[in-house]
Length: 405
Ligand SMILES: *Cc1c(COP(=O)(O)O)cnc(C)c1O
Image 1 (cartoon, rainbow, N blue to C red):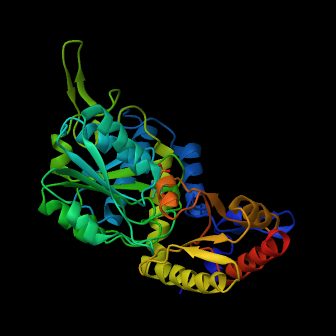
Image 2: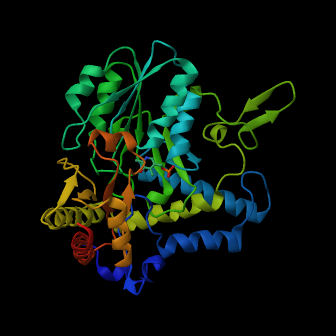
């Protein structure tokens, strides 16, 4: 088990009081806090190795290049990607999905094609597909979910046909925590010849992800949801698929040679990394990968599952609280509503108690509508949370009900 001692000083942001109360951070699905080792890796880069990559023969440039490329190898290892060239550094999961939509889908699809997504997607896995549908005339279809927030697999199977060119689904829902059976869904997509894209923004901070086993074509991850810095994320893409693709953005580093008559592209993955990337961010993300591997996904999932079960029981026992999303397979996210109290008011009262939760539509407006809601409260847990945090959350929710309910 993970001992409290490991975390006593690991997360500087958590060592503070909010309005005189110890901060209880329950908003890790929006962004995780950063361990000291990640902060140190970023600082160390700027203090010792700062230089541009891939271009210089001088020592700093070589160090920076090595650290950046090491981070790529680390991420490939974390995701069990067969080759490190299959990892492209981008701004985040959003940019990764936009790259697939524009550089892979757009030149390959047309009016007769269908893109399938699910009802529980983050806006980042909806809007890029709407844009590409507008540009190509393809249609977007949405796989419904069941009442408990699980994917409706029967409906998914029925919607799959030869017309489906792309299936893009979230691995874990940020809004209700559902873990999708992505391996099965990707296999079903493949059976009709569709390309599969998985939004893994909420997965890699919590569970072991094996892109080979899932057998997806693309997998998007987000650095800041897995203890890494903001503004960095990755796209895994199958090597043969990436090689076939044209670049997305043009600029430095993505070219082999440039003339006004003809420009030739650099190899994968550099072909997709135009301009100076977030070097420090990639290095920070590498440190986050080490942090995760030292903890071990088994320990992380065990701890988070305990918090999920305890939180679900504790909150569920409060009169007036309804838990939204009760799929059998869930990550440590608990969405809930409180009778007669608007989620924003619950959030404000909780903040006064030092408890940070998220309220609103969680970038999943269509999902909220499917539950007949505009907004929910959401408590999301990570490795630095404890049962005591859950108790403090419950007390604060009861106070909110007493005051406003
Ligand atoms: C946060 C999130 C995104 C967006 O990721 P960024 O790295 O912030 O762009 C996409 N999908 C899901 C499910 C998310 O939780």
